[in-house]
Length: 346
Image (cartoon, one colour):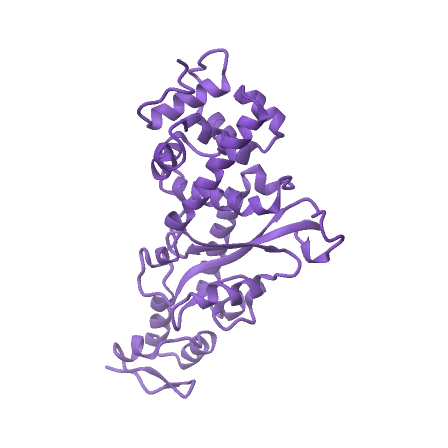
């Protein structure tokens, strides 16, 4: 029997064999590169095997589930051609392809509740007040047919209808810790989504790093709050890494081209793509690590002994926790919302 449908033991090698057989139905093309594999399925065979193991489809979905069915779902997300074309590549009817592809997309999406968790923002924590970087990303959709013309769907990013998601990353490791959406791109701005969602989940006194669109929000640190060159450089690297994650999500064509399927399925595709990107980070495609330390920077400002530097630091960092520095130096403390310099120890 073809390895497309017989895989008693599912491993990285299994998905390499199944992928080769699927893309070269006249026989095995042993020289197919990983680059070509990712061009069709979006992820490497090792991540496919991880997803299969986490879903456990023969127990949770159907005893007839096969590894190739997972590749059908990934190919739909990555290539996002018409079902006539994709079912022709798979060598099955459109009905069969549609059934299994969307079954595994939904199953992969459900993994987001275990793979993408807000608690992961504490990984590699060094005591920063800011543990997340947050940004919104828009995805194209076709104009909804129901309800007539609605400007609420309008996205200024590509001058057409779209949906918006909020993505949060661990500010040091780059792990995806938060996905919220979809929302109407026109009526739900980035600050509104944050205030009604992630803002309610943060610990007391905790802030997030964000771009200028969030500048009026109390719990967001933006470029407007950064008075020092070191901070601005560190902030630009954080934002650049966040855009890298957005780009990896948009590598799945279902998220970068107009979504043709019902909008109720868009959230499943986005979260499934988020799971693929997050698992890929630990499987040979890591993001660059950022040694983000705002407390060390502020401590150095206090130790400089320069009053103008100290006051600028306090003015640009109103969330400064007094005990962090008072215990070490007895230099700075806050009372009634005001920061005071009480002298330099030693």
